[in-house]
Length: 184
Length: 67
Image 1 (spheres, each protein chain N blue to C red):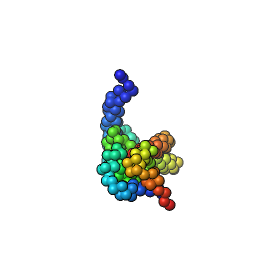
Image 2 (cartoon, rainbow over the protein chains, first blue to last red; image 1 turned 120 degrees about the horizontal axis):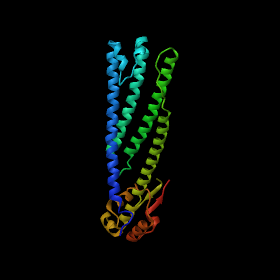
Image 3 (cartoon, helix red, strand yellow; image 1 turned 90 degrees about the horizontal axis):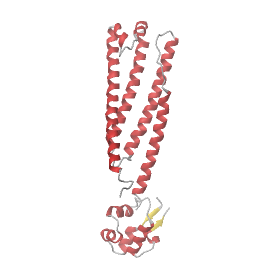
Image 4 (cartoon, rainbow over the protein chains, first blue to last red; image 1 turned 180 degrees about the horizontal axis):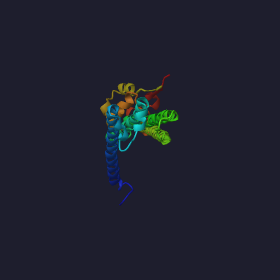
């Protein structure tokens, strides 16, 4: 007779497959962001000696006018970009850590809960960097500089809040699981 | 936790080993050890009943409230 548990093994395999795919995607995002940050840093280094390089820092990113005007604001703008990319890359790295450490036979561990909580803090920090970047480049823009960051990404803060709530629910789940395990 | 489990005291009084109690009660040694060392968060009534039967005692002999 078929019961509701008969689908369990195939469902588990499907969940495992989804997590493997997500793990690969997180690695791709992590490496992609590192490459982008590295390329911008490299182009920036070249542009210090050859200002023409600022015309195409990464895939058409043109900061040549900023570079011509003043090196200091140009350096600040590049720093904000690289910091933002670094934060995103580190978040993606922590996600790969979660996905590689999670064991579907026993997924509710404090280590995973703490990593999920860490992701929420990192996303909140990413929002903060984006916010500071917009404020700073807006200030530069008002002082006549010709470039400003286009978004402070408020959705980062929203996402951080949601992930933080999920991490707290996850922690509570672990507490209930521990209570069950220690009920004799 | 202010609830103290006096399982080891009762076992000593009845001169019963952990292995013997485990067989009589039907609990694993690790679960009995959790109970004995006070790490347990809760105890089911049927477990308490089985231990009381095996050790011929009352729940009050096994559990004590100490501030």
